[in-house]
Length: 288
Image 1 (cartoon, rainbow, N blue to C red):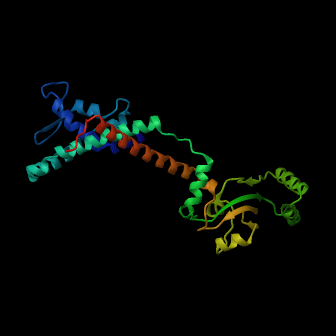
Image 2 (image 1 turned 90 degrees about the vertical axis):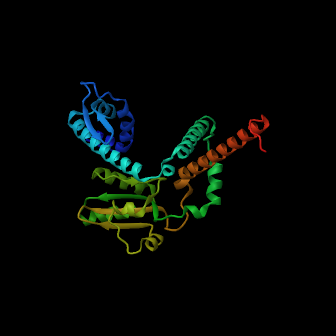
Image 3 (image 1 turned 45 degrees about the vertical axis):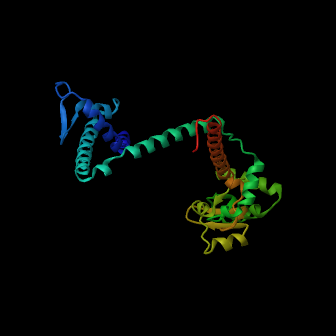
């Protein structure tokens, strides 16, 4: 059914093709029966075969054919009514077609040129420079954090107290002991490392529900929470509050895309200017 839906989405384009194809079909061919007729236009079985891919499942092809026939007929009716009511001047679309053709050819040429000549290597210095000069464009819409946390399914208060003590310690030996204890109980330490996540995304994993997350994050570097599943121990490695600047590493890919697009526009502009100057020099263009 996914294939059927994909084909139907392009129904209007297929109908336009049918309008052209129907003029080529032969009404006298008994192997190509007429399937629909609207005003002076006819649609044949061969037209439907051209519009429906050969590998379309049988259960989809009949429904697709019916949809195409119905859409085709509706388009013919609308076109007929337009032809009746528009003036000759309104129906003259030659200028629009020429303009569209010219724009399409120009666009295709420019994109081919961009693929051949555009330098997409963006240095770290360029990214840092753009980030610094356009800081106001990279304000955070949400609080973000770098975090380390784990969940423990444990009801023994003595064990929980021991885990809390190890978790709050900064001693390497205590950290190793905590990891050993977690491994024994089948719990894993979750560490985002250098990656940032939104605080709201963290809240989907950990039952932290402060009334004002922005203020709360600035006052807390560690937090504990519990629900029916277990106890949660959360350590915030870093945070950025809403409406402050995004960390550069979080927006570096976005900046890279912006810089590449700027280069693309500059390349096209230079190409247009060079072509025009060359045409003037070769006297292919003369201004009177």
